[in-house]
Image 1 (cartoon, rainbow over the protein chains, first blue to last red):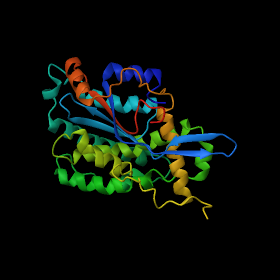
Image 2: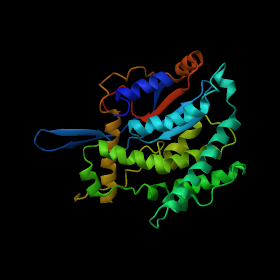
Image 3: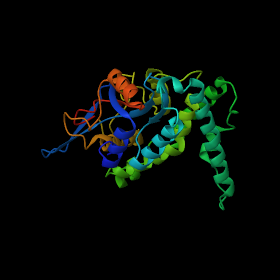
Length: 240
Length: 63
Protein backbone atom coordinates (compact mmCIF):
# COMPACT_ATOMS: atom_id res chain seq x y z
CA UNK A 1 0.00 0.00 0.00
CA UNK A 2 2.69 2.49 1.00
CA UNK A 3 5.18 1.77 -1.75
CA UNK A 4 2.53 1.46 -4.44
CA UNK A 5 0.90 4.77 -3.56
CA UNK A 6 1.73 7.01 -6.56
CA UNK A 7 2.35 10.17 -4.53
CA UNK A 8 4.52 8.31 -2.06
CA UNK A 9 6.46 6.63 -4.84
CA UNK A 10 7.12 10.00 -6.45
CA UNK A 11 8.14 11.50 -3.12
CA UNK A 12 10.55 8.67 -2.40
CA UNK A 13 12.27 8.67 -5.77
CA UNK A 14 12.57 12.46 -5.83
CA UNK A 15 14.06 12.78 -2.36
CA UNK A 16 15.93 9.50 -1.86
CA UNK A 17 17.80 6.74 -3.60
CA UNK A 18 15.56 3.83 -2.53
CA UNK A 19 16.97 0.35 -2.00
CA UNK A 20 15.68 -2.78 -0.33
CA UNK A 21 17.33 -5.76 1.25
CA UNK A 22 16.03 -8.90 2.86
CA UNK A 23 17.17 -9.82 6.34
CA UNK A 24 15.53 -13.24 6.42
CA UNK A 25 12.96 -15.23 4.46
CA UNK A 26 9.36 -14.43 5.26
CA UNK A 27 7.39 -17.39 6.62
CA UNK A 28 4.05 -17.94 4.92
CA UNK A 29 0.84 -19.43 6.16
CA UNK A 30 -1.77 -20.96 3.87
CA UNK A 31 -5.35 -21.46 4.98
CA UNK A 32 -7.21 -24.19 3.09
CA UNK A 33 -10.93 -23.41 3.33
CA UNK A 34 -11.76 -26.98 2.31
CA UNK A 35 -13.74 -26.03 -0.77
CA UNK A 36 -10.83 -25.58 -3.11
CA UNK A 37 -10.07 -22.05 -2.00
CA UNK A 38 -6.85 -21.19 -0.23
CA UNK A 39 -5.42 -17.98 1.15
CA UNK A 40 -1.70 -17.44 1.58
CA UNK A 41 -0.26 -14.64 3.62
CA UNK A 42 3.12 -13.69 4.95
CA UNK A 43 3.36 -14.34 8.66
CA UNK A 44 5.26 -12.26 11.15
CA UNK A 45 6.44 -9.94 8.41
CA UNK A 46 8.12 -6.80 9.50
CA UNK A 47 10.02 -3.91 8.01
CA UNK A 48 12.23 -1.03 8.92
CA UNK A 49 13.17 1.90 6.71
CA UNK A 50 16.37 3.83 7.31
CA UNK A 51 17.46 7.23 6.08
CA UNK A 52 21.14 6.70 5.30
CA UNK A 53 23.88 9.06 4.20
CA UNK A 54 25.99 8.03 1.20
CA UNK A 55 28.82 7.08 3.56
CA UNK A 56 26.55 4.52 5.23
CA UNK A 57 25.71 6.36 8.44
CA UNK A 58 22.09 6.15 9.52
CA UNK A 59 20.34 9.44 10.21
CA UNK A 60 16.89 8.14 11.09
CA UNK A 61 14.78 4.98 11.15
CA UNK A 62 11.13 4.16 10.65
CA UNK A 63 10.33 0.70 12.01
CA UNK A 64 6.97 -0.86 11.21
CA UNK A 65 4.24 0.21 8.82
CA UNK A 66 2.97 3.69 8.01
CA UNK A 67 0.24 5.33 6.01
CA UNK A 68 1.50 7.43 3.10
CA UNK A 69 0.67 10.60 5.03
CA UNK A 70 2.51 9.54 8.17
CA UNK A 71 5.50 8.26 6.21
CA UNK A 72 5.85 11.53 4.35
CA UNK A 73 5.54 13.52 7.57
CA UNK A 74 8.27 11.52 9.34
CA UNK A 75 10.59 11.28 6.35
CA UNK A 76 10.23 15.03 5.90
CA UNK A 77 11.52 15.54 9.43
CA UNK A 78 14.75 13.78 8.47
CA UNK A 79 14.98 15.73 5.23
CA UNK A 80 14.41 19.00 7.07
CA UNK A 81 17.27 18.14 9.40
CA UNK A 82 19.49 17.35 6.44
CA UNK A 83 18.40 20.43 4.53
CA UNK A 84 21.33 22.73 4.06
CA UNK A 85 23.77 19.98 4.87
CA UNK A 86 23.49 18.12 1.58
CA UNK A 87 26.16 19.91 -0.38
CA UNK A 88 28.84 20.04 -1.49
CA UNK A 89 29.75 16.71 0.10
CA UNK A 90 26.90 15.14 2.00
CA UNK A 91 29.09 12.49 3.55
CA UNK A 92 31.24 14.88 5.56
CA UNK A 93 28.87 17.80 6.05
CA UNK A 94 26.81 16.09 8.76
CA UNK A 95 28.71 15.11 11.84
CA UNK A 96 27.80 12.22 14.11
CA UNK A 97 27.30 14.66 16.95
CA UNK A 98 24.83 16.70 14.91
CA UNK A 99 22.79 13.56 14.24
CA UNK A 100 22.79 12.51 17.88
CA UNK A 101 22.00 16.05 19.02
CA UNK A 102 19.06 16.22 16.62
CA UNK A 103 17.54 13.09 18.11
CA UNK A 104 18.13 14.36 21.63
CA UNK A 105 16.35 17.54 20.71
CA UNK A 106 13.48 15.50 19.30
CA UNK A 107 13.18 13.58 22.58
CA UNK A 108 12.94 16.87 24.44
CA UNK A 109 10.50 18.43 21.96
CA UNK A 110 8.16 15.43 21.80
CA UNK A 111 8.11 15.14 25.59
CA UNK A 112 7.41 18.87 26.00
CA UNK A 113 4.67 18.82 23.38
CA UNK A 114 3.07 15.81 25.03
CA UNK A 115 3.26 17.50 28.42
CA UNK A 116 1.61 20.59 26.97
CA UNK A 117 -1.08 18.52 25.28
CA UNK A 118 -1.92 16.76 28.51
CA UNK A 119 -1.83 19.85 30.69
CA UNK A 120 -4.00 21.93 28.37
CA UNK A 121 -6.58 19.23 27.83
CA UNK A 122 -9.94 20.02 29.35
CA UNK A 123 -10.29 16.40 30.38
CA UNK A 124 -8.17 14.96 33.12
CA UNK A 125 -6.00 12.55 31.23
CA UNK A 126 -2.90 10.50 31.63
CA UNK A 127 -0.21 10.27 29.01
CA UNK A 128 0.96 6.68 28.41
CA UNK A 129 3.95 8.09 26.56
CA UNK A 130 5.09 10.26 29.47
CA UNK A 131 4.38 7.49 31.93
CA UNK A 132 6.60 5.10 29.97
CA UNK A 133 9.23 7.72 29.29
CA UNK A 134 9.56 9.09 32.80
CA UNK A 135 11.72 12.17 33.11
CA UNK A 136 13.63 12.51 29.82
CA UNK A 137 17.40 12.97 30.14
CA UNK A 138 18.80 16.45 29.68
CA UNK A 139 19.97 17.21 26.17
CA UNK A 140 23.59 17.18 27.35
CA UNK A 141 23.21 14.05 29.49
CA UNK A 142 25.62 11.15 28.95
CA UNK A 143 24.64 8.75 26.19
CA UNK A 144 24.28 5.97 28.75
CA UNK A 145 21.37 7.83 30.32
CA UNK A 146 19.51 7.76 27.03
CA UNK A 147 20.41 4.11 26.55
CA UNK A 148 18.90 3.21 29.91
CA UNK A 149 15.71 5.10 29.13
CA UNK A 150 15.57 3.49 25.69
CA UNK A 151 15.74 -0.03 27.09
CA UNK A 152 13.01 0.70 29.62
CA UNK A 153 10.78 2.52 27.14
CA UNK A 154 11.20 -0.06 24.36
CA UNK A 155 10.35 -2.78 26.85
CA UNK A 156 6.98 -1.14 27.41
CA UNK A 157 6.13 -0.55 23.77
CA UNK A 158 3.96 -3.64 23.51
CA UNK A 159 1.79 -2.29 26.31
CA UNK A 160 1.66 1.16 24.75
CA UNK A 161 0.55 -0.19 21.40
CA UNK A 162 -2.12 -2.39 23.03
CA UNK A 163 -0.85 -5.53 21.38
CA UNK A 164 -1.94 -8.19 20.88
CA UNK A 165 -4.94 -6.99 18.97
CA UNK A 166 -8.36 -7.99 20.12
CA UNK A 167 -10.37 -10.41 18.02
CA UNK A 168 -13.00 -7.73 17.48
CA UNK A 169 -10.42 -5.32 16.12
CA UNK A 170 -9.09 -7.91 13.72
CA UNK A 171 -12.59 -8.62 12.47
CA UNK A 172 -13.58 -4.99 12.13
CA UNK A 173 -10.35 -4.06 10.42
CA UNK A 174 -10.11 -7.19 8.29
CA UNK A 175 -9.87 -5.05 5.18
CA UNK A 176 -6.29 -4.40 6.14
CA UNK A 177 -5.92 -0.74 5.37
CA UNK A 178 -7.50 0.43 8.61
CA UNK A 179 -5.18 -1.84 10.54
CA UNK A 180 -2.29 -0.12 8.82
CA UNK A 181 -3.72 3.26 9.80
CA UNK A 182 -4.05 2.21 13.43
CA UNK A 183 -0.54 0.79 13.53
CA UNK A 184 0.79 3.86 11.79
CA UNK A 185 -0.74 6.06 14.49
CA UNK A 186 0.87 3.91 17.16
CA UNK A 187 4.20 4.11 15.40
CA UNK A 188 4.03 7.89 15.11
CA UNK A 189 2.83 8.36 18.66
CA UNK A 190 4.94 5.84 20.56
CA UNK A 191 7.52 4.06 18.40
CA UNK A 192 8.92 7.33 17.14
CA UNK A 193 10.10 8.23 20.64
CA UNK A 194 11.89 4.88 20.95
CA UNK A 195 13.77 5.57 17.72
CA UNK A 196 14.90 8.98 18.95
CA UNK A 197 16.03 7.46 22.26
CA UNK A 198 17.98 4.72 20.47
CA UNK A 199 19.96 7.24 18.42
CA UNK A 200 20.37 9.57 21.37
CA UNK A 201 21.89 6.75 23.40
CA UNK A 202 24.63 6.08 20.88
CA UNK A 203 28.12 7.53 20.82
CA UNK A 204 28.16 7.76 17.02
CA UNK A 205 25.80 7.56 14.08
CA UNK A 206 25.20 3.84 13.54
CA UNK A 207 25.31 1.69 10.40
CA UNK A 208 22.14 -0.18 9.40
CA UNK A 209 23.52 -3.48 10.68
CA UNK A 210 24.09 -1.87 14.06
CA UNK A 211 20.43 -0.79 14.24
CA UNK A 212 18.99 -4.19 13.47
CA UNK A 213 18.69 -5.57 16.99
CA UNK A 214 17.28 -2.33 18.35
CA UNK A 215 14.73 -1.89 15.60
CA UNK A 216 13.47 -5.43 15.17
CA UNK A 217 14.06 -7.14 18.49
CA UNK A 218 13.73 -4.30 20.98
CA UNK A 219 11.24 -2.00 19.26
CA UNK A 220 9.18 -4.28 17.01
CA UNK A 221 9.61 -7.24 19.39
CA UNK A 222 10.33 -9.62 16.54
CA UNK A 223 13.69 -11.35 16.67
CA UNK A 224 14.87 -11.91 13.10
CA UNK A 225 17.63 -14.19 14.36
CA UNK A 226 15.15 -16.61 15.92
CA UNK A 227 14.59 -19.19 13.15
CA UNK A 228 11.09 -19.89 14.50
CA UNK A 229 10.20 -16.26 15.25
CA UNK A 230 8.84 -17.40 18.59
CA UNK A 231 6.10 -19.47 16.98
CA UNK A 232 7.06 -22.96 18.12
CA UNK A 233 5.18 -22.64 21.38
CA UNK A 234 1.95 -21.70 19.64
CA UNK A 235 -0.94 -24.13 19.57
CA UNK A 236 -3.87 -23.56 17.25
CA UNK A 237 -7.15 -23.40 19.20
CA UNK A 238 -9.05 -26.63 18.68
CA UNK A 239 -5.92 -28.68 18.16
CA UNK A 240 -6.49 -32.13 19.71
CA UNK B 1 -2.84 -17.66 23.26
CA UNK B 2 -5.91 -17.09 21.10
CA UNK B 3 -5.21 -13.36 21.22
CA UNK B 4 -1.62 -13.91 20.16
CA UNK B 5 -2.70 -15.94 17.17
CA UNK B 6 -5.15 -13.21 16.23
CA UNK B 7 -2.34 -10.70 16.45
CA UNK B 8 -0.26 -12.85 14.13
CA UNK B 9 -3.12 -12.95 11.66
CA UNK B 10 -3.38 -9.19 11.90
CA UNK B 11 0.34 -8.85 11.25
CA UNK B 12 -0.13 -10.90 8.12
CA UNK B 13 -2.87 -8.53 7.00
CA UNK B 14 -0.76 -5.50 7.78
CA UNK B 15 2.25 -6.75 5.96
CA UNK B 16 0.22 -7.79 2.94
CA UNK B 17 -1.02 -4.19 2.99
CA UNK B 18 2.52 -2.99 2.47
CA UNK B 19 3.25 -5.33 -0.36
CA UNK B 20 -0.02 -6.39 -1.94
CA UNK B 21 0.25 -4.09 -4.92
CA UNK B 22 3.74 -5.23 -5.81
CA UNK B 23 3.39 -7.49 -8.82
CA UNK B 24 5.26 -10.74 -8.86
CA UNK B 25 8.93 -10.48 -9.84
CA UNK B 26 8.84 -6.71 -10.11
CA UNK B 27 9.98 -4.13 -7.63
CA UNK B 28 8.40 -0.70 -7.36
CA UNK B 29 9.84 1.74 -9.87
CA UNK B 30 13.13 3.26 -8.86
CA UNK B 31 13.92 0.75 -6.12
CA UNK B 32 17.32 -0.92 -6.22
CA UNK B 33 18.36 -4.22 -4.71
CA UNK B 34 22.06 -3.44 -4.26
CA UNK B 35 22.88 -1.41 -1.16
CA UNK B 36 26.48 -0.60 -2.21
CA UNK B 37 25.19 0.58 -5.58
CA UNK B 38 22.57 2.75 -3.89
CA UNK B 39 25.26 4.39 -1.77
CA UNK B 40 27.30 5.18 -4.88
CA UNK B 41 24.30 6.67 -6.67
CA UNK B 42 23.36 8.65 -3.58
CA UNK B 43 26.82 10.20 -3.47
CA UNK B 44 26.54 11.19 -7.13
CA UNK B 45 23.03 12.60 -6.80
CA UNK B 46 23.65 14.10 -3.36
CA UNK B 47 20.59 12.44 -1.90
CA UNK B 48 20.17 10.26 1.14
CA UNK B 49 19.44 6.57 0.71
CA UNK B 50 16.13 5.13 1.85
CA UNK B 51 16.97 1.58 2.90
CA UNK B 52 14.10 -0.84 3.40
CA UNK B 53 15.07 -3.87 5.50
CA UNK B 54 12.44 -6.54 5.36
CA UNK B 55 11.43 -10.11 5.90
CA UNK B 56 11.14 -11.71 2.48
CA UNK B 57 11.78 -10.03 -0.83
CA UNK B 58 10.29 -6.92 -2.39
CA UNK B 59 10.44 -8.49 -5.84
CA UNK B 60 8.21 -11.39 -4.88
CA UNK B 61 4.44 -11.46 -4.82
CA UNK B 62 4.42 -12.06 -1.09
CA UNK B 63 7.13 -10.13 0.62
